[in-house]
Image (cartoon, rainbow, N blue to C red; front, side, top):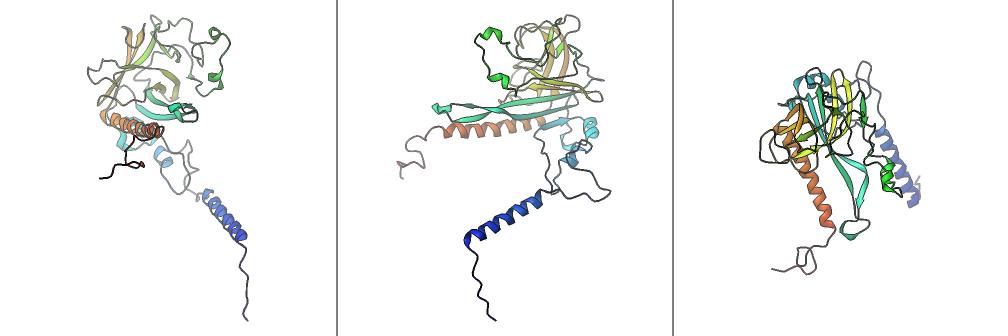
Length: 312
């Protein structure tokens, strides 16, 4: 018997195909149950670093940091051996570029020409059983409220608005560094009570470990993050590093990063392999920004690809 079946209308075929795709994606998104006796869910705090960062067919949270650490730190958290390098004064450092929740607009005279505002940040992990920090107060954790809606509010009288909102006001006995504003006051000389701040020689190609190119604002910290480890989050800057390795100092000063130290505390050494990886990340980010800036303006007359391109 010869059956003459009419083909389904096009709309029905497309609808069926769409449902098939949705079903396939849903099946991929589902996490299959782990066999008995094997590891627990991914992205769990109980899992070691390399386990959580290994793709096994399921979705996972990809680390966006560039790391360097000691062997002890790698053993403690199950970190890859390849980033155990000659770091000094800390147990680990982690660099990353973060997109803020807002944009900068108006480039090239165009209201809608926008790009993400970025922060280049450096986490330093101190083992305070070996390298204690001169804390300014008993606060256990502070982080600047960068992503708050407060930044968009402007009062009629600007004098009523504080210059940089702190998560917690500093101890009244701390003498603020007159050259620095708007950061967390985390450290101070226990004798003079003068505020202590971080500096580095990252962006000056000449000079020794005591040379200074810029200050590094403290934007967050957590004391006793794990065992004796405390983490300090610093502004690192998004321009490329000018030297092979970097020295970071924590000193109590009276007038900004280039002032004379009243007291000296922690010293950190970041090795060349780590600095090179940071520079590669910064260069890649700079190249992306350059493409954006070039897109704002038409190419010069005669440039390859334009209508009046010069013919050879």
